Amino acid sequence: MAIDDTHGLGYERVDDDPNASVLLTTMDNTANWAATRRLRSWERTELGLASGQRLLDVGCGLGEAALALADDLGDDGEVVGVDVSAEMLRVARSRADGARCRVRFTVGDACSLAEPDDSFDVVRSERTLQWLADPTTAVAEMARVVRRGGRVSLIDTDWSTFAIDVGDDDLAAMVRNAMRTERGRPSNIGRRLHDLVRAAGLVPVATADATHTWTAWNPDETPAPDGCFSMQSLADDLVAIDQLAPAERDRFVSKIHQAARRDQFSMNLTMYAVVAVRPTP
Image 1 (cartoon, helix red, strand yellow):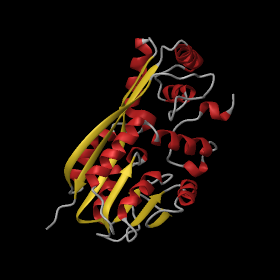
Image 2 (tube, rainbow, N blue to C red):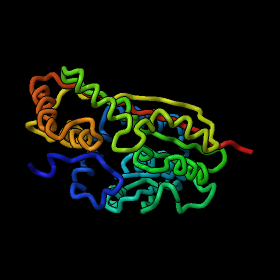
Image 3 (tube, one colour):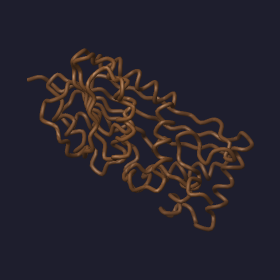
Image 4 (cartoon, rainbow, N blue to C red):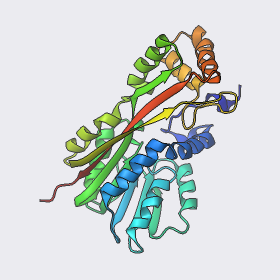
C-alpha cells in the first residue's frame, strides 16, 4: 500500500511528516470547502478592515486567507503571518508576490508570539487551535498583541460534530464516540471559541458556524474524501484508542469503501467562528 493511501491530517509537525506534500495539498482543498469560504466571507464582513491597518494571522498555513484580506489594507497596511511550519511558509511567501500591502511570513509559536503588545489592529486564527496543546494560552497571546479596540477572529473545527453514514449505525456510533477525543486531544475546540475569547478578556461581538458535507467519493480514484483523512488513517486512530479491534481494521475500511462505490456514503463536519473585541479602558 502506498504511503499516500494512509495519510492522516496531523498538522502538529508538518515539516517532519513524510507526507508533507499531501498535507499541503489537503490545506488547499479544505480552503476551497464551501463552509470555509462561507466563514471567511463572514469574517471579512465582520472585521471591516481599513486602509493602513496591521493584520496578524496566527497559524497562517499557506497564507491564502491572509493574502486575500491584504486587499482591504491598502498600500500602507501590513500582513504578518506566523506558523510553526517552515515548509508552509515557503509556499506562503511564493504566493505573496503582487500583494497590495507589505507582507511578512515568519516561523513562530502561537503560544509565545514574538510580537509586541498592542501592535496589531486585527488578529485572526483559522483551524489552528485544534492542533495546540494549550489553546487558552494561544488566545491570550492574540489578546495581548491586538490593540485596545482591535478585533480577534477565530475559526475552528469541532471534530465532535463529525459524522459518517454508510448505512451502518454501529460504525457511525463508533466513529462519533472516538471523535469526542480525536487523536488524543480535545476535539470540540470549535464550540469553545466563545468561552476562550472571554477567558482572554475579549468581548464577543459576532458568531457563526458552517457545516461541510461530503456526499460523494470514489475511493478508487482518490485515497481520501476531498480535504479529509483517509479511511485507513481513521481506522488506525480507532485501533489506537481501542475502539476497533486490529483484526477488524481492514473490514472497517472495506465497508466504507464499498458504501462509497454504491453512492451510499456521506460525512459532515461543522466549523465555528467568533469575532471579539479587546475592550478600551
